[in-house]
Length: 165
Image (cartoon, rainbow, N blue to C red; front, side):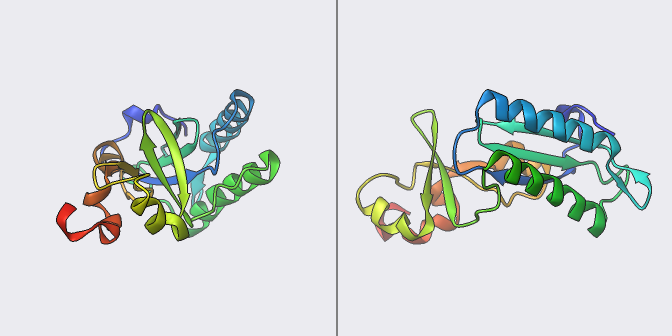
C-alpha cells in the first residue's frame, strides 16, 4: 500500500535508481503513475507492503518499504526491479548503470564515468569538498542524512591527494 514517503520510519529500506540524464516532466509523470500503481498493490507472500517512492533532482528514483510492517521478500524485490526495468525500457532511460557517479555541483547533478574520476579530479572538476550521491544507502534515515556527502567522506577519498584528505 502506498504511503507518503515522509511518513515512513527511519528504518525503512530504500533502493535508489539513478538515471543517466535528467528526466522530463512527462517521464516523471509516467514514473509516478506507474510506481503509485505498483506500490498500491505491492506484496510479499500475499501480505501488503507499506511502500513509497520519490523522485529527486529529476534524476533519482527512491523506492522505500517499511519492513516493520511487512518484510520485503526476494520475490517482492524482484518485482520492484522488474517495474523499474520496464520503465527503463519504456522511457529509453538507463536506471541500472552502476559505472557512473553523481555529483552535486553548483545546484546541478553531474555524472561522471568511473573511468574518468581520476582525470576529472586532476582537472579540478571535483574535489574532496564536492558533494556526491551515495546510492548505496540502505535506509530512509541514511538517505535523509548521508545520501549527499562530501567526496572526502566516501570511497572517493582514494582519488584525493594525501594533503586534502
